[in-house]
Picture 1 (cartoon, one colour):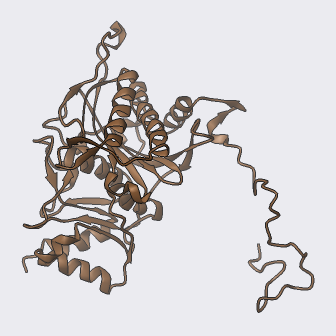
Picture 2 (cartoon, one colour):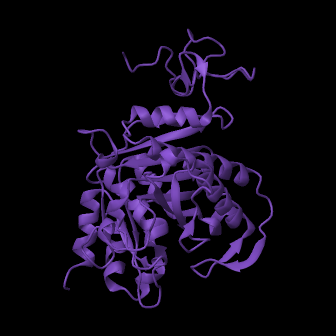
Picture 3 (cartoon, one colour):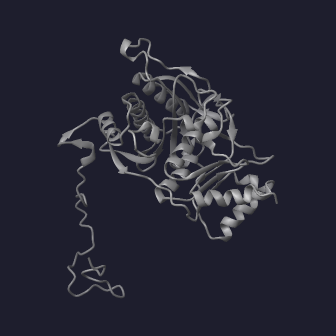
Length: 375
C-alpha cells in the first residue's frame, strides 16, 4: 500500500480535490470504529469477567485448573481495586503504619481487604502476606471438600497498592502479586513461583501475567502476556499476546536517586545514561516505571541504596513477582550489589529489603559493569 496520502496537505493548504470535511471529526459522538471485544465473547455469547480470563489462561496452556482459579481471583481483586480507585476522593490516613514505616491510607487497607476477600473466596489459597498485613495469614476455606483436600494449594505475597504516595497527583499506580505452591512463604525463593502478575491502574486497567514453563503444558516456554479490563469492567481481553524485552533499549528509570550523593558507582552510572542520551521515564512508582519497559519492549529500571539512602523494595511483596515477569519476558534481573538474579534470593524475612536492577539483558549487563567493578 502506498504511504502517500490520497489528499496530501502541502504548505498547510488543502488539495483542490480534497473533500471539504476530510480529516475533521463530525462532532456526532459516533465511535470512530466498532470494537467487537471478540476475545471476550465465545461464539457470539457474552461470558462473565472470570470466565473471560479463564478462557485466556486455558488458551495459554496453564496446566492446573486450580492455578487458573488462583490467577482469576487476582483478576477479580484487580477489578475491585479499580472501582475503589475510581471512587477515591479523600486522602485520609488510618492512623497506622505499614512494614516500611509509611503512614497507611484508608485506601491502602481497603485495597488490601479487596485482595484478601478475593483469594479467600477462590478456595485455592492457603496462606497470604502483604505489605499492609506483613505476616503469614491463613486464608484457607473454613470447610474444604474432600476432593480438594490434597490441593494443590497456593500462597500469595502481594503489595495491594504500589504507589500510594503518588496517587494524589493522579499518576498510574499498581498491585503486585507473587504465587508460590504450598502453604508457606518464609524460606522460599522467587524462582519457585508458579506465576506472578502486576495490575496497572491508569486510563486503562491492565493485568500483566508471567507463567514459567513449569506451569504450562509440556513443551511450552516461559511467557509474559497482558490482558485489559474492558466493557465497563465486565470482561478481560487479550491486549499483548506475548511481551518480549529486547536486548538493548535506551530508556532508563533510576529510582532512589538520593543514593547518588554517597554512592559513587551509582552516580557514575546515572551520568553514563544521561551522557549516552537515554530517554528518562520515571514517575516514582515501581509498577508504572517497570511496566513502561514491557510496553516499549525494553529499557532498564534501577533502585540502588547507599549508607544514607537505604533500600525500601521488599523481596516478597514486590521484587520476586516483578522479577519473574521480567525474566519470563526475556529480560534480566540482579541484586544491586551482587551478581545474582533476584529470583535466586531466599525470603528469610518477610520484610527483607534490597536494591535491584531489572530490564533488557544488555542494559542490565551495563549496570553490572558499573556497579560490580573493582574501581
